[in-house]
Amino acid sequence: MAMDGGKRNAVEKLFFATLLLWLGSVCFEILLNQRWELLSVIAGSIFYQTSNSIIRFFFSADKDPLFVNTSVSLLHSLFTSASVIFILFRELLGTGPSGMFDHSQLVEHTWPWAFEALSFSCGYFAYDQWDMLHYRLYNGWIPSILVHHLVLLICFTLALYRNVTINYLILTLICELHSIFLHVRKVRRMAGIRDAKSIHVKLEWFLNWVTFCVARSVPHILITAKLMKDAHKFQKGVELPLALLGMAGMNLLNIGLGMDLLKAFKRERKSQQRNLHDHRE
Image (cartoon, rainbow, N blue to C red; front, side):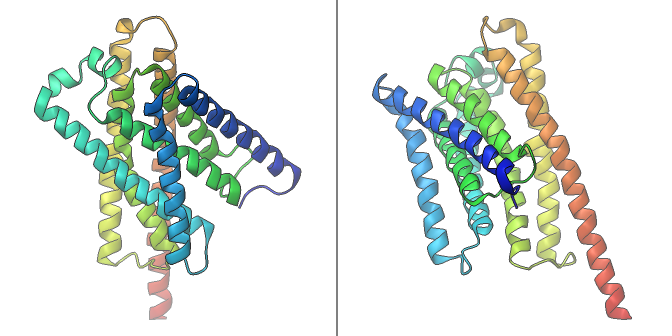
């Protein structure tokens, strides 16, 4: 639940204002600067909003906004993961690991379909920000999820405007592979499936931890190390400071997410043990 009263309204107004400014900026670039390729950002927002409406109409019996939002987030994670894997695999076959991870490739060039994938994902974060604000699906005085989305929108949009570091950002999106299992767990719990001894739940937790390490923590650490190693190769500007700041934020979020996952895992195990104890008594 969101905060109550005037503070909640102040938070909503602030983030709604930033979202409107972002939308105005994108429309300005498309219409006045004729950046028609940025239409894929708008297309992404429309696609996920349409998906929200379809899920709400056909699949959510009680129209729970959190269930619908999580389902759309799951769709985004599936779609983005498949796109990123396709882009990386295609480039790996064509260029090889030494060529595709060269500094100039990551900063100055754009892999085929990378711009479109990043634009579409940028559109999702705009949609999700609006949906969370509209249905007040956030917590805290400074909602971390809203701040996270705002930072991503700024980083993604600036990269798309300047057409730089697109490939770096595509690499960061490999974390959506882990987000699949985060959203699956959330949907599973909202559906009332909480049997910690179930083979499906055990498999879900196993894949959750594996992808947390392989697709989120390790890649983000390696990207940060690569940025620091190639820091002298960046030209003067905002690219390097913004990239380092963004990766520092992501790594901190990963630490917090890992701690939350561990707590949730222990909580589910304790709940299962308590239920077994009560059943035996």
